[in-house]
Amino acid sequence: MDNSPLIRPPSPVGSTVTCIHDSDDDTFDPASLDLHDDMGGGGCDQYPNMDDKSSIDGYSAPPPSSSLDGLETSRGLASTLPLPCPLQRSRELCSSFRHGGWHDRRQRTLRALTAASVSPHRLDRFARCGDTAWVLASTTEHGRYRLATNRCRDRFCTPCANEHRAIVCRNLRESLKDRTLRLMTLTLKSREEPLADQLSRLYASWGRLRGILRRCSGLLGGVAFVELTLNSQTRLWHPHLHVIFEGQWIDKAFVRQNWLAITGDSYIVDLRPIRDSNHAAGYVAKYASKALSANVVTDHERFTEAVVALQAHRLFATFGTFSGLHLSRHPESDVGWEPLRPLYLVIQDAIAGDATSRLILSQLSRSDADDPLTLLPPAPS
Image 1: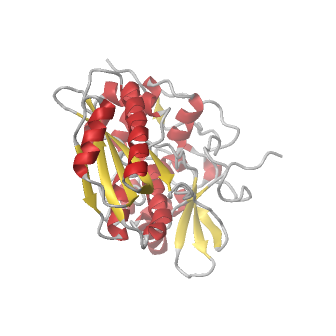
Image 2: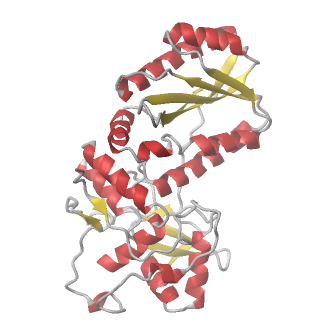
Image 3: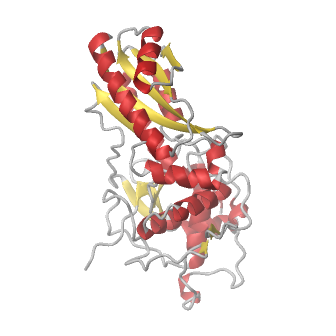
């Protein structure tokens, strides 16, 4: 029996509430975030004795130095931004807004991270992702809003992965213009061996093939993405490597022959042209945040194995002429934005029927909303 901790799903949460940038549905129903509150409405001062605990049942996070402790990056909004009172209800409301579209997967992810014995610091970041947030108003464009929130930036956190994917696509799109691009897919034959060993073999084999193609076929550079699928019947791993590359035409038979010679047992490869940079960006969007197939997430043992194996590997890497591209770079700046209100107060006002608050939440929920800025802990005194 699996006794791993669960993330308590806020109740009730409607289907129209989705994590930011994770849906094409731009509708928003603030009533769906109206969590049951036995103490009624009101502000921070009404609940001085309210427990400030994590929203994860059975999980005890290490004591934070502040309500925003545990961020993975030092980039982000200035620490002078005032912090809302870290009440349980405010955290539940903020977390519901960010994670409303993937409750079940988030619970499964926490189980896998815990079973993989990741650091308490990483678990704490994951559990508290998005539980504190401010709404910012544009100082240059009336009626435009964005969030500043604490983000875990974990590769298995869906909202963080979607935001990272968007950053990678934006950084790559301009660089892809006027390049002759192709897509190559390389697979390994399924084996009864640990995933970590298969990944090491996949990357080592790709390194050898890349050297051959650079010398013999004019391979210039590109970016390679890993994808892990699972055979539902045999539960064997099926690793893939998707490579968007720049260079001359490469004969598929030549690639297949060399891939088989390098791996010893794998010969299934695919090569196809990419018609334009928009198509290339589409491939990036597909692979940049899709390392695991859906059936991996529902298989606790295999999901845990993937978490462990991927700790030693990047999900994508550039090479050759693409090596200088900093695809994950996200220069965050609070210039042009000023704090408006804590998000949980905007949500509460929207639930109460305030039209402006509803409009703000609707804008923040859109698939084309501005990426959140990373809210940092206050600087030590």
